[in-house]
Amino acid sequence: MAKTITQWLVEPLDDWTNQKVATFLIESQGNEDMVICNDSSGKPHNLWLIPDYAKLCVLNKSATGTGLRYKVYERHTPNGFVYLAPIWAQPQKRKKRRLEVLQTATRLLH
Image (cartoon, rainbow, N blue to C red):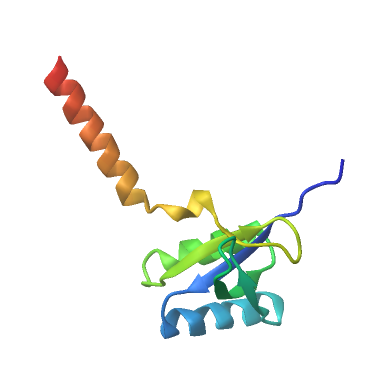
């Protein structure tokens, strides 16, 4: 069976983020790859191709305090559809909120 290769793509949600992602890609790999991809519903997206998962993690760490706003997509075939990456889809705050609700509900039940 062939090994699946995941491509990581970033969609900036504002012009400032777009500029910062382009600068990051030029500094980290020497070039920038902007591609237009369709999702499963046929909607086109302008996305930056991130070379590997490690670079995506570096970008995410730099986004924490700088206000970068973007969505992360993934695809498993070079010319296939893109999908919103499940591990990047929900912000951490929602998980904390769910935990607080669960703890409150548990306290009320006991």
